[in-house]
Amino acid sequence: MNQSTRAHWSGRLAFILAAAGSAIGLGNIWKFPYITGENGGGAFVLVYLACIAMVGLPILIAEMYIGQKAQKNTVTSFEVIHKKGTFWRVPGWLGLCSAFLILSFYSVVGGWIFDFEFRSLIGEFRGASDEAIEATLGGLFKNWPRQLFWHTVFMGLTVGIVVSGVKDGLERWNKILMPVLLGILGMLLVYSMFLPGFGNAITFLFSPDFSKLTSAGLLEAVGHSFFTLSLGMGTLITYGSYLNKNENLPKIAVAVAFMDTMIALVAGIVIFSVVYTYDMEPSAGPGLILVTLPKLFSKMTGGYFVSVTFFLLVSFAALTSAVSILETVVAYWDETRNVARKKGTIIVGIVIYLVGLLSVFSTNLLDGFRMGKGILAKDGLTFFDLFDKLTSSYFLPIGGLLIALFFGWVAGPAAIREATKSDSAILNGGLLWTARIVAPLAVFAVLYNLVIGF
Ligand code: PHE
Image (cartoon, rainbow, N blue to C red; front, side, top):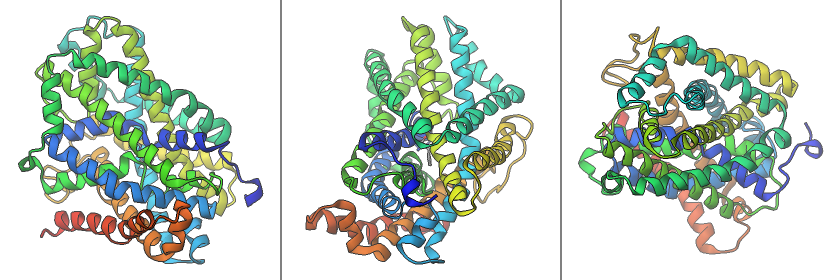
């Protein structure tokens, strides 16, 4: 595709919503609460918030700038800005690997959400006992054909949307669904304020106890700040490449990071209010929201309606993120390998779908199969956990570190001025040195601490 025919967002708002649509997804509503629970709450949340502000935000601007400037996919963009064959294509390649792995398990979790939407619709949670709700999730994990079915539906929809392209596929849905999601979460927040566990939830999330934070937890917080903002794998380079060249990036980046963080925190407050109201375990793991929320819905007035709407919205939030992951790979193929968009999308979609089977089987057929015992985790990891850990804790932070270095040292001060469209020495200098030193050092220190140890 050449520059003049390249598709573009219809405007600034469309881009903000698309970037927010990518950022806001299962990372906020499913993953943030459960990893916060596993890592003891407050201290983890604090590190995560610090990373969003000091590491995430500059890299968000860097990625958007690289795409906006080069108007190319995530690998070629580095060549356009630097030179052909540059070493700096490495974060682009790494990002493509991350995209394959992330989407493969993301689609399986998206499938769980679809399943819970279906169950909500047929009224399965209405008046259901707490035991029955707990058994539902356990049953789904053991039932691989059911998971496979929903994984197929989820990937099918993702491919369908990406095939339709930037304007008709991505833009239209984001515009409608994101604002509705904000509304319903706000409503659940108000509801949770009246639950007896609300106070404990706030204490758990916002009073840090650093003795509970391990070095693995620290890396998970850093990694999650990348995952949740869709950073470190070129998604925002790709989305930025559909943006006109005159948009002001720092403002957009702040808006996206702010919305993303608010949604995660609100989801956390709602979920932990339920956890503490019903005396549940905060560290229940990946199934956390699928046990807590149905318990809430089964008891609240209007629970049927809230549950149907809520899972529907989470399904859409997951889809808009999944679409952005697939788009990252497809844009690369489309531009560099001359594979027609439709064909490319379908092929890539099928490969990712097949890799996803390993995650489908992780809670049943391959349950006993663990890798990296004693190295990656004490008891080893299932495929599902491996793909998640490898990408969130390693690939995305390393990709982000390289992107920050590229932005700060290779593209340099001129690029930064171009990205901010401002002459403010504080803004430009701050951004330059966070990209050059602060962000890379923070990521490096955390990785070093975990792998080698200080
Ligand atoms: N940010 C998305 C979420 O929080 C996931 C994602 C990761 C999307 C990486 C794109 C790239 O659900």
